[in-house]
Image (tube, rainbow, N blue to C red; front, side, top):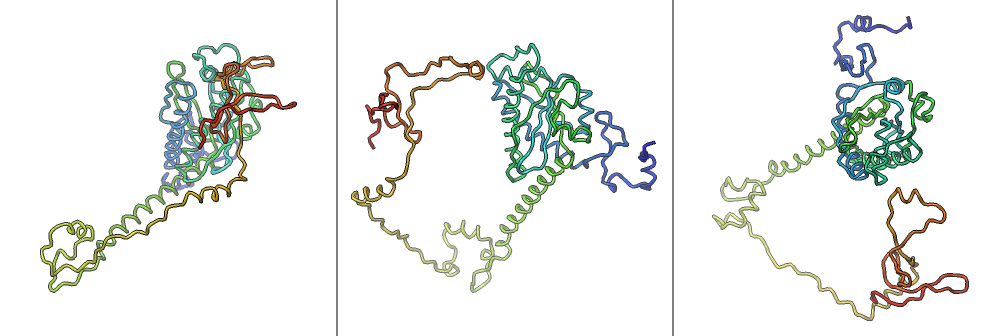
Length: 389
């Protein structure tokens, strides 16, 4: 034997302690995990991690829908445990592993796993295709496209995490790797986690009629617990602030002093808000109301600025440098067309030959002109000022 205690021996040593007392949640049976496996998170932590992933990945799905120009649906996540080796051996191959490292707000990283065809479809949609051009093996172009998609998706998810944890969360650009046979094909960051039992969050992702499959997000238990602790602290602070705010509102009603009167009057002990509402009503007894001095508000008259002060003020900013840009023309191209660029490619602009070019100052169009040559440099002769002010 390997010297590890069986579940029966552990139960005997615990002497009948309940799962709540030992802070170990009951087995959920996911992924064939047996009851003798060490559970990394409590039930409360698992539920919180599932909810956090649900919200953040929902935001990421919205971003992906914009990139592929199609409807993206992600189901409620399912949280379980597995090692990277177990997932790699059981997942349909070839597939793509994507590693995301957090550089601010959270310590660690997580891994996303997608099927090969799903990656090809997403890449094809991003490049303007219809999602059906998925023949051949995964290329660097596919990995680059899915890396950019995940960069924007996880960037949106990080923004969502920032709101939930009330602190800035930032990531490095994701690293996408094709996995086929050997775990050594993965990056060093992923290989370092290959033998660890990780928290696995599984989603069903559907993109239009093209994709309906499972994607997985895996991260260490320490990373999951850090998210939970941050979420818990923000929630507790919000509840404390809410209780404090309610106490401040209730305080004047309890301690509001009564106005002096010849005889006690019940209406004099009403909350201040009722006194303000009753101020517009006709008084029942003028002798019971305290005199209030009311006078019109008086405001200081502002002297108008003399026009001769303008040049004096503008002299203060005469030395401020501004960026002058001359725009020859513009063109719009798809990612697919840009990737086909090569030396000799001609790009047609939206300006006609001989048409005046635009002169911009700090990005604002102010004039038009014509291109001239001054010795060995280009120059612009201004022909029209669009706004003389």
